[in-house]
Length: 429
Ligand SMILES: O=C(O)C1=C[C@@H](OP(=O)(O)O)[C@@H](O)[C@H](O)C1
Ligand SMILES: C=C(OP(=O)(O)O)C(=O)O
Image 1 (cartoon, rainbow, N blue to C red):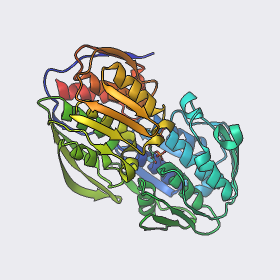
Image 2 (cartoon, rainbow, N blue to C red):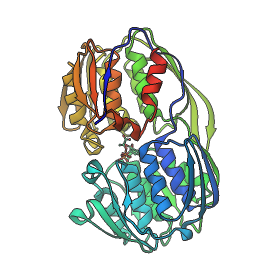
Image 3 (tube, helix red, strand yellow):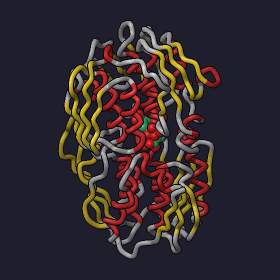
Image 4 (cartoon, helix red, strand yellow):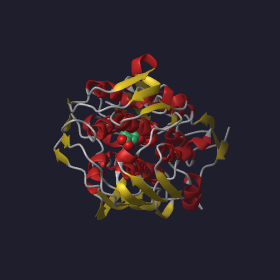
């Protein structure tokens, strides 16, 4: 198993950084590109393991996908050109690939089987299979389709009006993708708006989709129109460096060309709430996605309560925010984040256990955690537990730890951020 010994830095993180492409947008660019009739090109694609799983899935369905690093060319004959895969589809570690594909495949005229790694096999799928069954989908799997492996006998689905109980962009997107082949318009009404990349990109591909506040209505398609996608930098990846610069004295860092979709910027608002010195400059809009530069400087931080509707807009950033809270004065309370328990690991448990091992004062609650700061962090031997975001949280913690930190299973970081350690070296040299 991969292992890294990480040492503290004696100067701040300075300079400029461009982080890899957005994971959510990269997945969707492959899925919608495969549904388009013709050639779709993607620039700045995230060549992390999760997005490669999405590519491999469509290759198994006969779509020609040429990927060279961050550049991808898809040649497809649209949804009717997709072929029944002759093998089970391996989703690896990727929850997004799982929930979105289960939605899409339920309405296509083919039989598919899907499986994943040990982590994904334990993550709940009923949140997507239940609404699909309401649309008439034929899905079976462990515990009646709650867990992978799952088999889908795709067929024409009925449209629904769906009000998801979980605040999940994956579930919303899975149902919208199923709606593309359903009989009539499909409506999703969210209680809190979650990331809306599927909606934005469907428009860019010529789909008929209407968004009115938290209500989304999608029409069935014949096929989509191919387009060119430029993927913005991933704010969820940038977050690790935004926090690193906030907690390492002497830092001043600008992250360039990062996605600033308002359904994703909860981390920036939370950093501001904790008195981080952060400024945002919006520079352009591509494919319905706002892009810009974010500059952050080291500053004295204070604790804050992070709760409610902001949580879905920063769900993947909570591990790194928790690390930041260990360096903030006073109490940070994170609430309404029980969804963390259903990620690659139970992130309430892994964050709390890891930060405790590093010397922090932190306690788990059912739906979040309470952190008392500031506390110095100390030498420890800790593992990512196969969870990329925990691995990166540990690497950032090591920058300010008093002794060296051993990170076991460091390779997990390649799931969403290949080149992470090169970027860290580049900014700390
Ligand atoms: O739709 C997406 O691309 C994602 C949605 C979120 O998951 P949930 O939908 O389960 O909240 C997030 O945690 C995941 O990393 C990516
Ligand atoms: C939860 C995550 O991804 P997924 O659900 O796609 O596995 C993540 O990237 O933090």
